[in-house]
Length: 338
Ligand SMILES: [Zn+2]
Image (cartoon, rainbow, N blue to C red; front, side, top):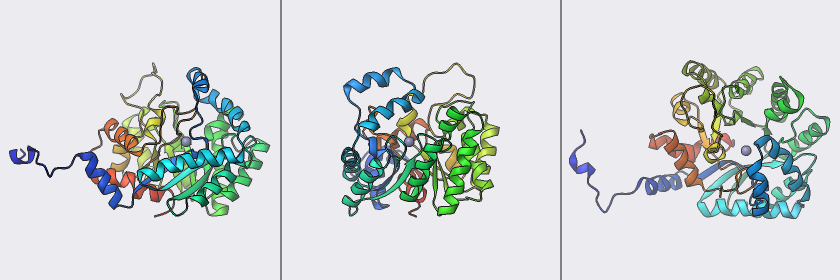
């Protein structure tokens, strides 16, 4: 039983939010480990109408129209808007995916490099190539290879090649990422298990590929939500393997909280990265905002506190020391800065 005195508020007591914000500042500031700054603030009321009617996979095509209309200056401006939002919150480092593909060509990365240079005294930015067109198609591969030389970290989206080229091609996508990462000595960040569905085992696939290619400690899974759609026995086996591969995970809580209701059976769950289980298994979890006010996340403003609040509330996660790590040091690890 607590002493009654500890339950009484005094004027010196801090709220949990004030305590965490102070600790995050003392530990080097917020780290936004995953965003797509190049497309930030591109949603309008007109395009919102399209957003309402499309699934994620349909949106990949809609995005092409927007991207083809953006110049290098447009990309610079939108990237800078996202960076400004980060600096004003006390974010000291961020990892941003940037579209480098047949549609955006080099315009987005050129704009991003210019913005990074402009803000270099205020924030450290790691750039990561978004492989929205996959890496299997010949033209997409050309842009992947070109992008791989320009960025700090290689980015992946195996689901794209699985959709376009058929079963097993997501694994091939991972082979291309790992081979290129090894050759260039770069880390790999991969979007996986986004649909909160037992049909997905992408976190396990990326872990297996990490072990197979000897990329231990160099690979980061983004989202990994569908882990929670599987049984406890599966999850425990997966965590063991992830620890062996020294995997890290980035949670982007708002990104998939809108996951549609399903009629599938499975463990009762929300649509969040299971930070509670992953942390207990010794797997570092970092946090990111993902998309900011664009087709994917029209209402998201890139607010780090909102993201952290949703993650810890949704997972009933109460380990305050590790919550501070999620917001700070784990992000630096995931970006190769620690
Ligand atoms: Zn993303």
